Each structure stands twice: as structure tokens, then as C-alpha cells.
Length: 198
Ligand SMILES: Cc1cc2nc3c(=O)[nH]c(=O)nc-3n(C[C@H](O)[C@H](O)[C@H](O)COP(=O)(O)O)c2cc1C
Image (cartoon, rainbow, N blue to C red; front, side, top):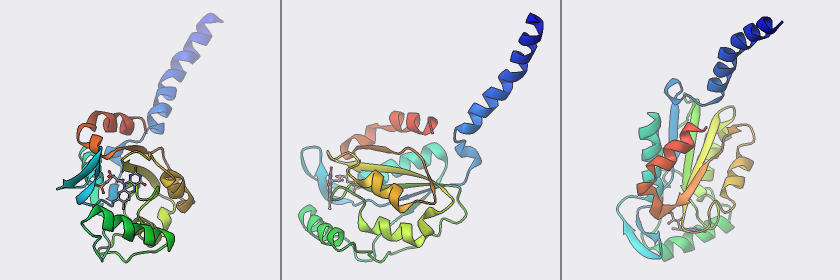
């Protein structure tokens, strides 16, 4: 009796381990795209305005690409946003209120990818409108695995994570990661940990 149970346990163990491994994302076996919107130039950083040579969300996106081997795609509006933080805030607020869908500079169908990370800076508590444009262009990533990431300077996700899931009703949305923009440069270890837990 005792012997029989031990045999069953031994048989089950490798199968359970395999199941657990399968539940985790194996990025090396998947086609990964990292689509992101980011604004370089004057921006809010820690406690004041700073001129950013590279946007925080772009650094975040590049770190994900480095760790997953994925391809990068920058979501850019055809009409560039003002360099000035204040002017950009005004334009972004008008677009937000109008539920605008700014035309994009480049297009990417995301068709050949299994996993699509989508990243943005928190603008007025949600995604910048060009991100909405892109999500509509790619059929709201229907049938894909979608993973959000976001930078902000105090609002956390705001409504962004919820709005993202609402847009992507037909995608499998995985747990995202948000952080303060000024922390991104030193966040590789926490980004790695998040990826390993997906
Ligand atoms: C138009 C605009 C609106 C913003 N709105 C918010 C906000 O509502 N909450 C917040 O925490 N940060 C807000 N920020 C700050 C950015 O989210 C933050 O600086 C972010 O890290 C910038 O990322 P990026 O360099 O990739 O554009 C805003 C910045 C801009 C330019």
C-alpha cells in the first residue's frame, strides 16, 4: 500500500513541474514585440522639470527588449508634441477631453507576434491618445498576449491599467508594471523579476 502511493507521487512530480513551467512565459520561445510611446525633451522628473535626452518609457522598453530579446516599435504621432512640458500638457489635455485619435507617423501590424508589451507615460491619468490610435489599428490585439508597462511621476497607473484592459477585451492581458520615471534607469533588477514571474 505504502509502496504504491510512493510510486504515484514519483510519477506525478515531473508532470506537475512541467505544468508549472508551462504556466510561466518562456520569452525565448515566443515572438515578442515591445510597442511604446515616450516623449523626450522637457518633462516632469522627480521634483521638477528636466530635459530628457531619452524618454523614461523608452528606457523601460529597451530594458524589456534586452531581457526578452523582443523587437521594439515606437508609437509616434505624426504631429510631434511640443517640447515644452507645459505646452505638451495643454495639447494632451485637449486631446484627452476630445477622445482624439492622433494620426501615427509609422504603422506596425503586430501580426507576427505572440506577446506584445505596450508601454506609455501616464498622461492626465491614462494612456496618451496615440496609444489608443495604435491599439485600434492593431484590432485591439485580439487573441494576443498583451502586457502593459507605464512610467509616471506620482499617479501610479492612474486609470491607465484599467483603460488598457477595457480597450483589449479580446486579448489576454497579463499583470503589468508601473514605476516612477526617474527610477527606470536603475530598475533592471525589478523589471527582470517581474518578467520572470509572468
Ligand atoms: C502631457 C503630460 C501629462 C502628464 N500627466 C501625468 C499624470 O497625470 N500623472 C503623473 O504621475 N505624471 C504625469 N506626467 C509625467 C510623466 O508621466 C512622467 O514624467 C513619465 O515618466 C514620462 O515618460 P516619458 O519620458 O517616457 O515620456 C505627465 C507628463 C506629460 C508630458
